[in-house]
Image (cartoon, rainbow, N blue to C red; front, top):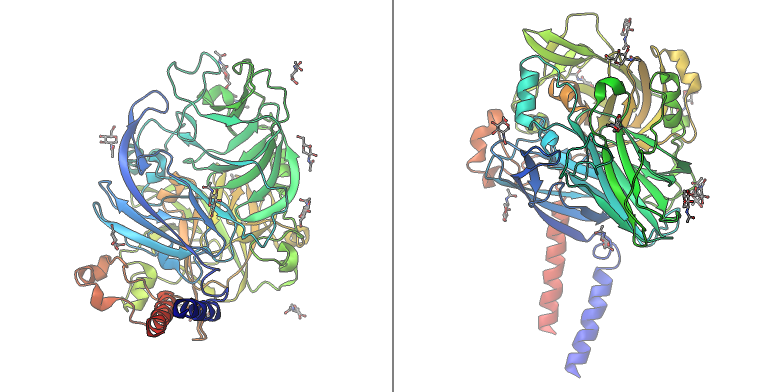
Length: 593
Ligand SMILES: *[C@@H]1O[C@H](CO)[C@@H](O)[C@H](O)[C@H]1NC(C)=O
Ligand SMILES: *[C@@H]1O[C@H](CO)[C@@H](O)[C@H](O)[C@H]1NC(C)=O
Ligand SMILES: *[C@@H]1O[C@H](CO)[C@@H](O)[C@H](O)[C@H]1NC(C)=O
Ligand SMILES: *[C@@H]1O[C@H](CO)[C@@H](O)[C@H](O)[C@H]1NC(C)=O
Ligand SMILES: *[C@@H]1O[C@H](CO)[C@@H](O)[C@H](O)[C@H]1NC(C)=O
Ligand SMILES: *[C@@H]1O[C@H](CO)[C@@H](O)[C@H](O)[C@H]1NC(C)=O
Ligand SMILES: *[C@@H]1O[C@H](CO)[C@@H](O)[C@H](O)[C@H]1NC(C)=O
Ligand SMILES: *[C@@H]1O[C@H](CO)[C@@H](O)[C@H](O)[C@H]1NC(C)=O
Ligand SMILES: *[C@@H]1O[C@H](CO)[C@@H](O)[C@H](O)[C@H]1NC(C)=O
Ligand SMILES: *[C@@H]1O[C@H](CO)[C@@H](O)[C@H](O)[C@H]1NC(C)=O
Ligand SMILES: *[C@@H]1O[C@H](CO)[C@@H](O)[C@H](O)[C@H]1NC(C)=O
């Protein structure tokens, strides 16, 4: 009887204390990711690639809206490491962002535990090592953020998920590629295209024998969600599946207006979800193709990425020519057409129950316009560098916000120009002074000779316009102010511009960069410093207890415990502390009873 009463009381207390807010809502998923070199031969040539837990590509990070994610990253490489999670917004927590301007590298043989919340997010992303071209050797893996059960997705639940990491590939490793760039040369043409870390199926005699290829096993009649990411170094890819439609449904956390495509362009750093129904007759297997886009085929002459779609009732191997690529490479006017069809489904619910279109971005007045122009690489002080507005970014020795918190002077300059300057290019640690709660327009003007993808950390932005030539204010008349897609990585064609709008409500310092690894390595990036001037509870989190020190704060690395926190910033773990206290209170009460 006493026992019964006790459990009853305990039940009551638990219901009272942990009604939806604390417990049910925010579970934690934990991972250990050990990064090592392994030998692999994706294109038939043995080379060192970066594996995560022995796998290349790395394992899936699987979470649900509002989950806390804990990833203990163990660095078994021979150089510094940071893992970044593009598209995950890390609200008020740029400490977790894993780029060199916010975080000191994890030293070899050390580990660092990332701890962040996927607040109000859904969708498909991928993680990767952000330093020094390491991504060109691997270290990447898919990220999935599922909807909460209470919010329905705008299509029938697919029968399965298929992750595809596609990307151009060099048989040289990232250190060799670095040497090429350091000596003032371009990387040149990649050696092929990989799909999930594997080389092509032998679709014709140009493919060497004995190459391992990817096989996707499917059942007839079923519909799968293909989450496709371009994890490559610098090449835009065209993705297609022989005989099957690609129904576009999501990109980087936004549900799109659903549309069928027979082939789809995916630029470096971008992620898309397609629904593919197995509605063919399986007289044979089918080709899954990722081919280089905007290359002159007579010059490219490299193997294309080819995987195999294998129905469980298939009657034989795939044969014959690959499905054709779009043949408009010499008609670039049409190249923007597909991008312009990518729009958000304004009535679908994303991470929250209210429709995606309920934020009326088109009616908000723009507070600042930044025009960021990229030019082809130039020599500055005898070194090849790439620039944005004439500035080639040099990473700070001491990360930007860590320098602020510890009052390190001169770690960076807050003077990044809001438009191209008519002055000689320089190498500098120059950061954009952006206004918290501003509503900014960013014009990405590509005066380089190659297509580039731009990415902003901490945010997603509305892609309101894209066109050839030089942007001018009159182009605003053509903006999509109604259902522009909101995403975090967008392409900018050479000789063209792309306009995006963003609401700067996430305090922190956030990287704005080109995703093409060569240009990024050469300095084509900056950061936006976005600080809430008021202490109203919306300020950033304090540095985490396990923050790594370097640069001018190197000596703090030795005795960390005494230096954790120590500012007016709030730390999320405070919530955990209160939760732990509440838990022990319950425990204590129960013992008493
Ligand atoms: C990368 O390749 C170079 C040259 O082939 C080789 O010397 C080096 O050991 C490799 N680096 C790694 C980390 O595998
Ligand atoms: C992700 O986790 C959910 C449970 O939270 C599970 O239902 C789902 O199958 C997992 N997906 C993958 C790809 O592991
Ligand atoms: C390193 O990993 C251990 C467990 O393997 C963990 O206890 C420790 O907190 C990690 N260190 C950091 C700095 O995250
Ligand atoms: C093999 O296929 C590629 C298309 O990827 C084509 O360019 C090439 O000419 C073909 N080679 C042979 C020998 O058929
Ligand atoms: C897309 O194509 C499939 C056939 O593959 C068709 O059943 C479906 O209705 C199409 N959906 C749209 C939105 O066009
Ligand atoms: C299967 O589909 C292919 C392509 O649509 C067609 O050429 C072939 O005749 C079909 N075979 C059967 C047995 O229906
Ligand atoms: C493609 O490259 C070949 C070889 O360099 C060149 O002759 C040809 O003119 C190029 N084609 C176009 C359309 O640029
Ligand atoms: C938009 O989302 C709704 C769910 O709210 C769905 O029923 C509809 O099919 C979607 N429309 C398109 C064009 O994707
Ligand atoms: C936007 O600016 C116009 C004047 O330029 C002003 O009339 C309007 O009230 C502003 N709208 C908002 C929402 O602030
Ligand atoms: C940055 O902008 C704020 C206003 O948003 C201004 O008060 C501050 O002086 C600026 N700092 C610098 C270094 O320009
Ligand atoms: C770059 O700008 C120059 C001068 O405005 C122009 O002549 C050239 O065509 C541009 N090139 C590209 C690729 O935009």
